[in-house]
Image (cartoon, rainbow, N blue to C red; front, side, top):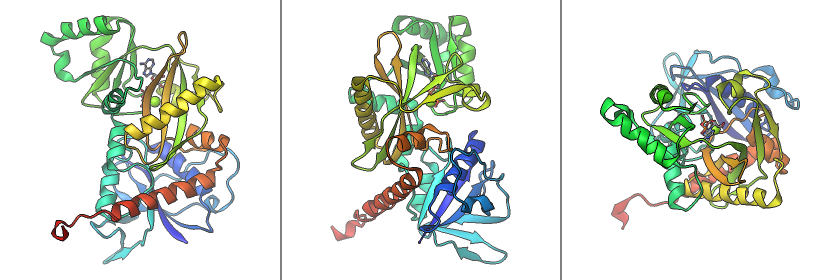
Length: 371
Ligand SMILES: Nc1ncnc2c1ncn2[C@@H]1O[C@H](COP(=O)(O)OP(=O)(O)O)[C@@H](O)[C@H]1O
Ligand SMILES: [Mg+2]
């Protein structure tokens, strides 16, 4: 029996999505193999031990969308450097004896390497990408640079910060866009998610406001050529020998896959799993997904997102998500299931991969006095 801490909630805008992802994971974990310690993170970032609802112990009903209750701030959990997770009770600390942590935290402060760094410091194994892979996956500019250096196809982009939109630099930026890709163009924060701060800009007059809106979420914004494209996603699983599953497709009913389409509009998008693609395109996407995973230095899992241009059929890597949505209707678990790996087996695999990663790092030498 392994003790697994499921970390969820958190400070990011995806707090509520995390409650649903974590419920799905908790419902599908095999209770004969794992003792679950649910740790909820408040929107302020404090960690508290939670109690699982009754339904967590009953077999999950197919496709049911449940949410864990809002995080209750009762007994605080602390990470102790070199010594795991402890529960703060009235006048003492009690070791929670965690074997592995499953961070189910989407976006900033959870998917970006920060929590992974804390877990490394506390000497705890965890599921998913390490500090480096998480940080790379969170940063759309850095991941694109790595992919470009490996010769992988990405949409042309310009990275800007607040200096680039200052009065004296702005016209030069407009000229640069017009030389490189023109209008419409697409603006997004370099490090964010859920389509917040993104917009399609049809005219230079709307450019500054769009960039300012992206810069509310990240210190850098990316300006990209607007691609009229199908949106294809591919699940990848593994450490040094990752496997890719047959891709799925998201068909947004909006102008693009915006925040409303993702979370607010129940008819915001249609999910097609597997995606209707030619054998050739499917294979190309699976092979590009594996290269993208490798060059971004990801371990554990990731959902690699692509654009397939409607007119030309050209394939572009868009972004990589190291803690993708895990709700019963999310793409990642559904693509794995459709590819033959059932949800509880996927969780076993992820836990095994996290333990393997930890063992690999533990086997490295750090003490120079032995040299
Ligand atoms: N260059 C682009 N051209 C056209 N649409 C885009 C482009 N980049 C992003 N989008 C649209 O915006 C959505 C969100 O952008 P994405 O880069 O995936 O960031 P996020 O991390 O917020 O999901 C995409 O799913 C797509 O619908
Ligand atoms: Mg996306």
